[in-house]
Length: 219
Image (cartoon, rainbow, N blue to C red; front, side, top):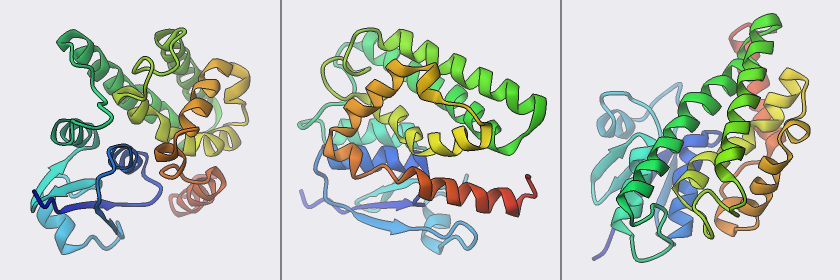
């Protein structure tokens, strides 16, 4: 089957990075289309008319929206190589639970670190570190959340590493000092080419955050 795969994305998006990693892991040839979110393309508006957001995976003309859903779709369609979700239904449910935890805790608290200040920022930092420690406990002694190989939760979580420098600099704290085991896991993930080539330079993301802070009047 001659698959036509297109990814509508925006370079600093951790959600888009998830799909970049998954497509690279499974060696799926695709076209990458960079979106200007201030001037959204007709294609993006057509393919995601409900949320009008990236990333959108377009497979043979059909759109799949929302990164975690698209991640599952990629795993199901290209299931012969580098499976991300476990075959056992209970383990799959657990993986989905932790990926949802990442979106509700890591993303939300991380975003508050650079969009707030004072007491609100201190609370966000504490909540963020607490969430990372919960994930550390779940990881346990496994090399990856997926066990011996990179899995669904790993791919959902590791893109946020590109934002860690921005969180640390804006919040004046060290993630490695608080969660060394978590950073060891990140380094293991980065040994994989699919991850290292999909994640962005932390300093570049920080520069992007500074532009956003200025735009929104956050000093």
